[in-house]
Length: 435
Image 1 (cartoon, rainbow, N blue to C red):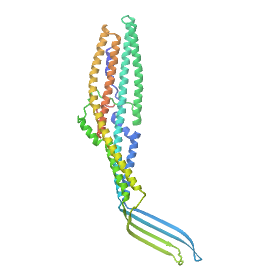
Image 2 (image 1 turned 90 degrees about the vertical axis):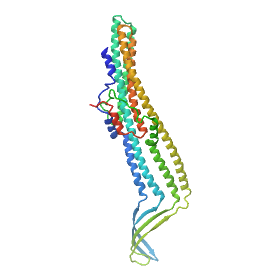
Image 3 (image 1 turned 90 degrees about the horizontal axis):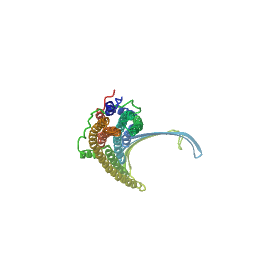
Image 4 (image 1 turned 30 degrees about the vertical axis):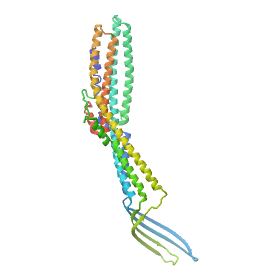
């Protein structure tokens, strides 16, 4: 009896000392996760937006060349000769508001790509942590149910022996058999859930770890710092990556209005040209002709009327700016709600962990009391079986509450835009040392 109780009580604390911890799993995910790899490629593409925008305000140089065979007749005289020409042009914008606005948009789009990449990094941390703790939770559930089945097996054997000597009825045997069968069925489902959780983690890190380090016995889960929901909400409304992304998108939309409205404005360029041409003959004689032209000057282009397209595109951009501003308001509200939910998830999770720890002690005491009562004849078999199930259920709920609280802490940091590798390192200190 004592040995069975000991196995049941320490099953969760000794989940296993597996080979991988949260930090190593996260670093593997940085190299393998397909979604994060896509985010890195997207960021690299975004870096080119600044270069592309800058190109519109820098000098442009072009060259051209041609050769033509001429077979002409002038007043009855045939003339056949070859004409060649080549030239170069340099154009430097002096005033082109659309080009300068597009350059500003390019820089903003690069900043947007950087911010989206940081959001993807946060998302990776959350996905890795959720998958990691899902494995631990599934493993804890399986271990608790294995211990419960072991206890049910021993209780069934005891009931059969007691029935043989006539101290209990056949009903006690059937009840013990029923609980054993139920524990076996639950264990099969728990082992299946554990395998699914392991495969979900392997999808992110590219391999199935032989094991993961469990939560240390006695690991303390601290309250949020600062311990004030309003401060977290305020930080989320300003610094959440989703809010930052929408702020940048709004600034880009504002520049888009300016860029389209610039279609009404003139442009001024410095243009320098060089052209060299020669031909083997002309209509005035058979002598060779060579020409060299060098020019430099200002070129002004003034749009007069373009069918209303410029005005239409400007109105379209203004409407999209209004939409972007509304999206920014929604992003702020969503970030504030996420911060509130995460904060309450942490605080209520801590309270739940404390309550379940007390319930675990009570369930342990109840199981011991029912076993002693069964031995002296004041309790029946079903009382012991119920106490065993209650303790196992309480331990599973306690483990899940701890993992949910840790995830809520990460989500709170993510809502405020502060979730990074240091948070992973902090959680890693709560785990057992990997062998």
